[in-house]
Image 1 (spheres, rainbow over the protein chains, first blue to last red):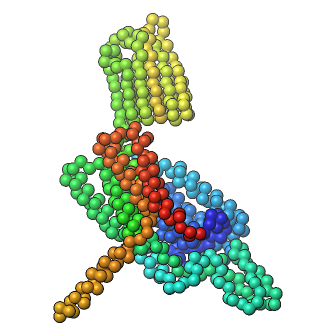
Image 2 (tube, chains in turn orange, purple; image 1 turned 180 degrees about the horizontal axis):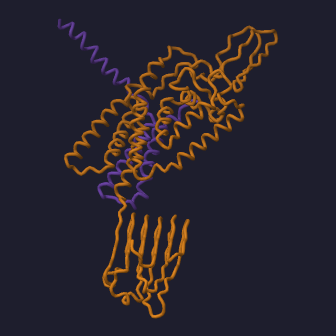
Image 3 (cartoon, rainbow over the protein chains, first blue to last red; image 1 turned 45 degrees about the vertical axis):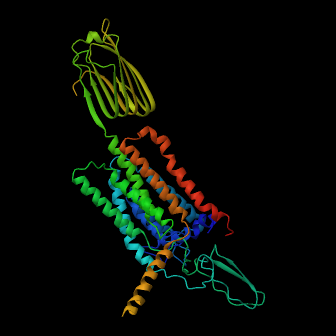
Length: 397
Length: 86
């Protein structure tokens, strides 16, 4: 199974023999020479991310012909079908990337995806094992699943087979035997025993251990122990690691990589959400002495209201620095003070300073509120990585 | 009677030992690589969560599991490359 074979997308057929719904996963898995369970689980898991899995499945259902046929529900020739498949793949990738599943709260979806993935595996694995008996001893060339059946040792002639187009040209000088066209795929042969897939399936034992560990963690959490939310997926990740290390030498650890990948993503998501909890801070100093020269925030919202300052004249010549990472900076200045606002959003965001707008990537706006001659002069210097900055003249919130 | 018991238990023990031995196989590099990588990620998570490392340390911490996983995979597959499979 080479790269060129895989790239020949027009050869893909929906499997008749290995199907749960329409044979899409079975056919794709045969084309890629991998276990169909992996693709089935992937389709189910992807369904949770904007329905990508479902859309992809239906699209492939309509585009891929069945075994033994050259025409799908949507009738396209080989070239057009290849092009359509590439477009479908690109669209699915685009949908997946644009879904934004790394955001806060994505953990719930991941957990849901894990549960569905486990259920999918639970329904698929035993059937797969029953449906795939071991190869009889001395099975000749069991890799030849894509090839035509071995030709009968005929007394005369040679046969050339074009497996790509599914047609066959017989070139037998003396008439030879009548040749029947082979199906696009030869009947499925039993797989050879992979020496690295030996021993007991570890997936179910690992699932049970993970369930016990998660339950124990939950009990400890309820009992008052300080259990971080990310400890749950991290436990699953750690156990996946242990069982994969065991499975690399003993038994079969199939399916645990997928569980580990989902657990890793969930661990990242919950750790980030837990540590960078956005919060809102409002600062309303009542005198210029209370006003700090610098205010910072990480993620969230920072409001600085200077309209309650009872000695605005003392603000003359001062500069206030506000810096933030992600979120919203808002400054309200008293009408009787001349203010220079120097604002910058280094990443993506928007700025509104005394009615002057700016937005996009790496934006800076400088604006002045002129309170007339003789008014005290204050400078506001606000910097943010991502988000919005508002500087305005006193108005109630 | 005693002879009957030994006849029954002996093959059972033997069978258990043999079935365990039958489960041991040549190293599966894919599982080994992902196992090492996941283990490394858990260690990083533990360091962050315990306060031993903070977010700024992730820049140099995060590549370590993958380097370790790749090294483990290379060590596991190197002897096989010497063979003449193709």
